[in-house]
Image (cartoon, rainbow, N blue to C red; front, top):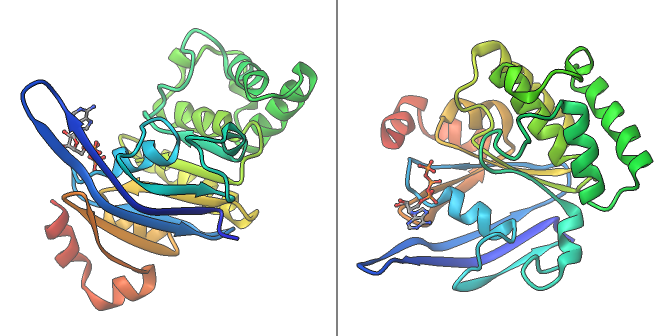
Length: 239
Ligand code: ATP
């Protein structure tokens, strides 16, 4: 069974003046251990698609299954899902990494003791132990991003959704986040990450789905895509 199966998603945003077809036709499938890069220029519909998969925005059309559960109808699906959707804004800035992990762990159904233990494991693993008592607002963006990913994993989900995980990070933090993504996938989790940077997709993903103006225009194993087109061709297309 795929970890994620999203078929023919569609979303139109309606305001009082106009309506905008943000997502016209998006289908994505993901197996355990796979990293899918969802690549496309700004405004292509990546975030909207990811939010539909995360159960935050109701699709107008289409079907979503996370391990065969519908995130919009079966809340059980959310147990299998972790998401970092708004940079590091899923965190409480005046709390410490330790407190964030405990708080979100309990929110995700762990006992306080389990949440503390799991928090400690993640802080160790993400090399954040020395910062566990600093407030989030005092940490660098790279550290904040690591805490955000740790928090998304506190309940041990099978599927991780990461919206632009390396955006705004310096070179060192980018490399750390890339390493973590690869490690997390190698444990048998599925990861969908959005990016508008071809090099991020190239470095991290097994498959790439390219979205443009709300529709997936191509989907291929990453190495095939890279071989088929020179990086510069796509870089230009994505700018
Ligand atoms: P970016 O990288 O800039 O976030 P994206 O590929 O993630 O781009 P979306 O954020 O999904 O794209 O946006 C797709 C389109 O929908 C854009 O034209 C955007 O302006 C519009 N849009 C996004 N959210 C809303 C909203 N809440 N109401 C109205 N229009 C929206």
